[in-house]
Length: 121
Image 1 (spheres, one colour):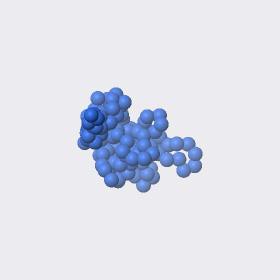
Image 2 (cartoon, rainbow, N blue to C red):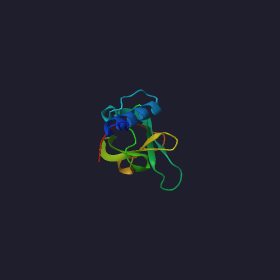
Image 3 (cartoon, rainbow, N blue to C red):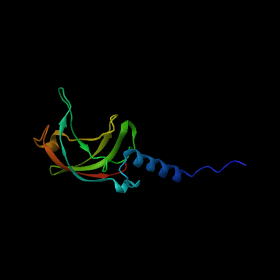
Image 4 (tube, rainbow, N blue to C red):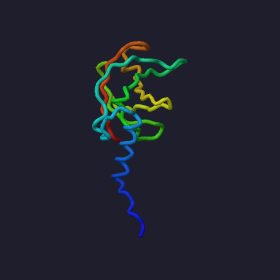
């Protein structure tokens, strides 16, 4: 007699639990537990047209849900709210790009307050 296969639900929650364990922050596996408000320092990748990012603290970073390490979020910073994605880099950091229109003159080295809300597509 074959052993019963685990349900899809249990394998998903196990995967989320493993993701939380990898982060090492002990946060809940529920997507609703991710997001929040934080302050971060903007940094710009070098080169012409380099994007400007803020690093999302690991305790607030949502799990990767889409290809290329991205996860949809709603972000608010510097008085603007927009729908975007955060990216998990190969180095393990989660980054939020801040478009020029949102930055309103803020740039590399400036500290900004950001609110992130996890969302699904």
